[in-house]
Amino acid sequence: DAGITQSPRHKVTETGTPVTLRCHQTENHRYMYWYRQDPGHGLRLIHYSYGVKDTDKGEVSDGYSVSRSKTEDFLLTLESATSSQTSVYFCAISESIGSTEAFFGQGTRLTVV
Amino acid sequence: SQQGEEDPQALSIQEGENATMNCSYKTSINNLQWYRQNSGRGLVHLILIRSNEREKHSGRLRVTLDTSKKSSSLLITASRAADTASYFCATDYGDYKLSFGAGTTVTVRA
Image 1 (tube, each protein chain N blue to C red):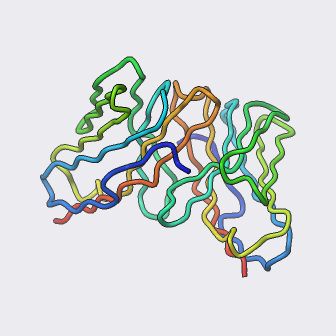
Image 2: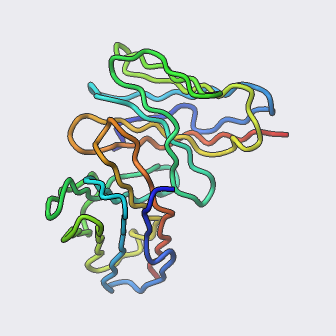
């Protein structure tokens, strides 16, 4: 299995609080992604990174920010959590986009109450 | 919105039967990939097909790509109970992003 871990695996938080999810990889892959998965929507890209300090928005980036200060860590922050951000969040890594497979973490189930 | 769309949304088959699902996308791609997700788990890569390829095999999996129709199909032959999962296509448009469809949920009945 690829060395990718997400933490925490489960979290319950209150509306309006900030939340940070962590993705850690030991593969030295250049590309890292944050997706959310909701019933009926599949996986939707939130933010992605193509190198240290190089990040860009995906299709559902509102309310989220990311940071990548080193190759192995990609943080996703919900600045002020809302109930609509209740979801399962997946991190993925890829050595090169498109020509190789992406490896996924086990997911973080976030509930905003 | 997702760039790739799978069809059907759900599929129920008997063990031993073949399962076919399709993926349509909107614009030109570099590559297309298929992934499997077992309930409550992360996605696992199955197969990648490049834009200049028309068909690819991996074990019981067969993937086709028709760039003129902007569509791909995944065939699972001789299905097993362990094939019960959701299957997603993912498209790479050459812009660093990997875009996923909503998936096809496959149930294999014993």
